[in-house]
Image (tube, rainbow, N blue to C red; front, side, top):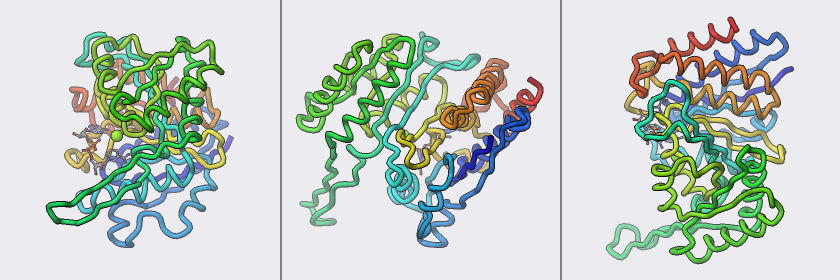
Length: 352
Ligand code: NAI
Ligand code: MG
């Protein structure tokens, strides 16, 4: 089976881990014999932006639309303001392709140490609304630079947008063994959009009687993640809230360098995009020491989306053998380089 993958390595360690991920996917293709990836690289980085004045050229999204999936690294540079790089590249793709469901699994991999006691019980999927809310880009500034200056950042929650993410989250919860879904909002302090979130959640819940539900305010859920991690399973939250709690989830399971995410267009009208959740990591970029495991786990999610279940299972098993072996990059307390970890997992895949 042949899959056309658009590859956007982006900036910093994005380039390093995505190159590693491509090698691992190639090893899986070699191992399988009937699986084949055609990778097309897109050079839309911050360097490219500084040279051309844009990240995505005219017609770029139309070009991307022809692919089966997008494998993305990270974007962010000290030469470009972060709100420009994020909006002009990553959000342009997520919003342009209506990838409204962002899926973020968090689980402690074998051989990885967490600072949290009981972290071995973490097996969460955080569902993040990925198309509106706090990141609608709605707002502005008046009286610029003056003492009376005001900036607004107005969240937009549409019934359609809220309903579709809740439905997606219920489907996810129902497909998992515990069938448990926690709603996270801040509807005590924010009394319009957040209350709409709560109401629509319980409307949708009626269609999923098998799913056990509960609710938590976003501040309270951070303490529950740390103190009672086993009481959570599937979690649904807004764009901003889930952004924050999923970084916490990654840290609780060892490192930001491990965690994967999928930006899904569930209707499959457009391609979905798969990326490690970390950024371009200025502090370690160019040193060859980035942890590529997040990019590998991301590849597992991409394979699942492409219907390549066997390859996805094979890769996840190889990742777990790698972490269990105790060979780690520096973020997990080891000394292994990106290249060494990549070589080890490719050899393992070809031998299994
Ligand atoms: P970051 O995720 O790049 O780094 C945070 C910390 O985690 C750093 O100490 C870094 O070394 C470490 N880290 C991250 N990934 C790692 C890996 N694979 N292996 C080992 N250590 C790892 O977040 P930060 O520093 O806030 O942002 C840097 C740039 O990345 C900014 O320009 C930001 O806007 C951008 N960014 C982009 C994202 C994306 O493209 N989706 C997501 C997050 C940040
Ligand atoms: Mg984030």
